[in-house]
Image (cartoon, rainbow, N blue to C red; front, top):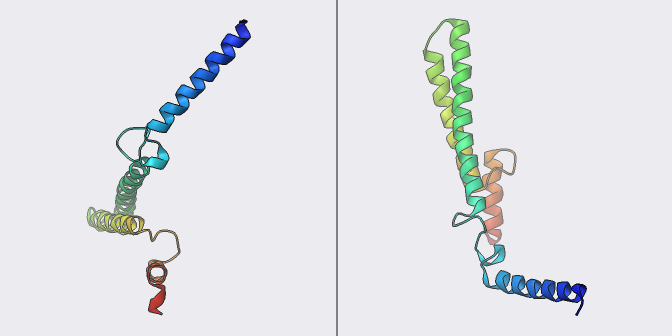
Length: 122
C-alpha cells in the first residue's frame, strides 16, 4: 500500500465519520444552533430592540439639549424631547416585534397584516 492509498482511505474514513457526526448533531434544520442555546435570530432581534431604544432616547435628549442651549430654556426642552425620543423608541420596538416595519406607514402596515392573516374577511 502506498502513501497515496493510505491518505485517500484515511480521508474517506474521516469524511464518513464527519457525516455521521453531522447527521446525529442538531443542526440549523433541526432547531439547534452551533453557537449555543440562544437562537442567533433572537439575539439579533434583542440587539436591534436595545439599539432602537437607546438611540432614539439619546437623539431626543441631544435635540432637546441643543434647543435648550439655543433658546435658554434649560432643562425643559431636553426633558420633553427625551420623553418623545423614548416614545419613538417604544413605537419602533412595537413595529419590529409585530413585524410591521417592512412598509411605509404604521396604519397601512396594520391593514396589510390584517388582510394577509384573514383573506376571507373581505
